[in-house]
Image (cartoon, rainbow, N blue to C red; front, side, top):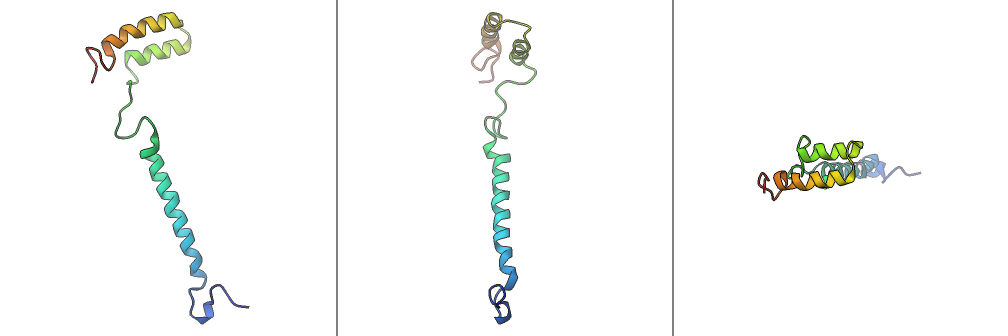
Length: 94
């Protein structure tokens, strides 16, 4: 019975199994790298979050989510905050 890839005849022997393992590690490493950097979604390393966590808009969203204010009050206050702190308002970044 012959061994893997004719090891006794000068072939690569059992080391031939190492190459698929190395390629699998390269593919898994590449996917992991892409998931941690490029495929992060909206919050990649190149794009800051749309609303800062301590901003008034975020606080209003937390209050609405916890049930402190109702939907009408949320939209009313959000429209005022968008004018002051929104992206296109007076204090906006862009």
